[in-house]
Length: 639
Image (spheres, rainbow, N blue to C red):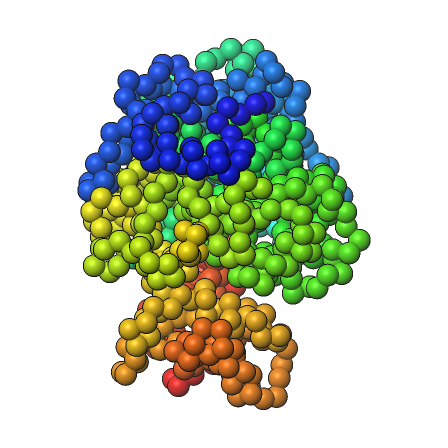
């Protein structure tokens, strides 16, 4: 499949970028015409940034699944659309051609119709990383239902909160899910989550692990039983639901500063156009390549760059049920070798984790198929970038360091693989149509290189958050009131003399020491340079002279006899790398860091511990290992 909008040279990037900012409507109008629409739009965009309101392709009608599936049937029906690599390396791999995936989605969509699911209904999907997860979300989109996928490791209370917020009356789940050596009973968790909810109509249960579950009559139904009653001819001949471009496609919950999750809403038309455009350009996707994004589909990365972006582009996308360190630390490299993966898109957390195992898990693996590497989720430190580049890409694969958010829908700042320069730890350039600016606390634009500021986006883009479900005021107050006319990202950044952006982390993770702004990522990168340090996280805590001082939580490789010596060495590194202002006042050695199941360090919790407010940590049961928090509290310095 050829991509008319693919940028193939640095000169073309600058030309397209300039065109996109001088006349955004004309730019996006041309790109949107590459997709299949039931009815063309009558207005490209309608934007009111002060109110946090944007609409794209007004009056346009479509169904995103026709762009993911139907439009490829004439040219590449037998081309592989989806590869599933199971948790157990020796279990059966499953592949779906575009024709097979289309049939599976149509039949699942018919199952949903038969069960009463209608356009606008919210359907919660709580499953492991299996093909039916992809099929379910596409089936929801095909019938016009709004899917809300919840990561398969969340607790019952987390599910209850999300179900109540979305008023999702249908749930699709599995009996159980595999995750490394563990098996989770998802149905039991769902039962607990809905025990006091009266609005649940149906729970559809897929048999995956054959673990024992209870089924409530009239509410709970087996997937296979429902599918046995589906008329396949009717399923294939029932048209996809016509959706307005601005109709909601999905709700995805993300953490908020108040602790209550925000239901980020994305629409059908703009999200489709932007995710496909960025997938093709950032990764420089070529027809026939195998794209392996290691994310869970429960997160935005999985939505955009395992499912919707790749499938709309007619790509081959690989989804992975397992974890990178099981049954051993060579699992990712086994998958790359087995499937001849060309594009690998993963998180810095995974890279740093695998670095700790040394080079032996890599040495026997054939990684020669790799052509593009990518990182996502957090700023990547130089040491991890260099390791990834040298040992995984063998010095020949460009690394795309992508910055974006759940709220942005797709990649906003990133080099384009092999087209624009890549620089260790720099996200580099904005995608066409994206106008990033750095602002001072007072809202003035920063035009000086190497000055950290608040990263904001001027104007709108097609996949910008539409609202927070059921509470637009929250959306407006979170993203649009701080600096009128801009989208507020909550991240800090600076740019160099060439205008390349480097993300320094969350604004609330930017330390202000004696009036100087210091990014937590910068401090952590310096600490991690110490030979004996595995990982670190730093936060600020109140200091009567400096305003804020640095508290570092440091994971050490092994037990050691002289912690004060290591503390001194760390501060020497900080002084040498950043300056004396960056020395940490407190350095606590900890067994691990509080992380979400996706690997994100919860600095909010560490900040509360540093401040001594250990009674205000909120719900920690959804963390990867809640016991780590107790151990950190026990070892807190200067209680």
